[in-house]
Image (cartoon, rainbow, N blue to C red; front, side, top):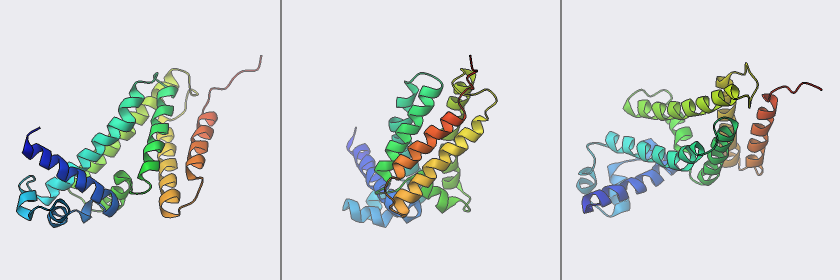
Length: 200
């Protein structure tokens, strides 16, 4: 990487850390200039606008999420093993983010009623992840790992609900055992949707 690219990457790393703690709206050119010991114009030269910076931070977060959760899960067998891996790695990432915050979750709170390019980018990323979960759940049903007739959309909804509850209880309420409860909830959900075994 050239010097300019290295500097830009360093700025984005610092910006991602700041956004994880203070929110996307908390990102400013001035804040990053102070953290990087650069002039505002020096930081601004790497991004067309504050909005461009915020979107690039979202893209970097999404990239990390894919590398840590999505792509490793795709190496697992299709169907339930893949769905289980997606949830397990998702929980693993959330436990690391308890100290800082999940941009998907905090971003949803920041931009739920604020239309514009940042909200559109964030919505697209979350929908892409939900789409991947939906495909894995659908494959699990088609392969007979889960009961025929189960709504894959409901599975995605319940998985997301467990993650939101985990983030809330672990980060906001500081409740111990939140990770175990989320894992237990997922296992119970899978048992609920398991194929019915006919008595011999």
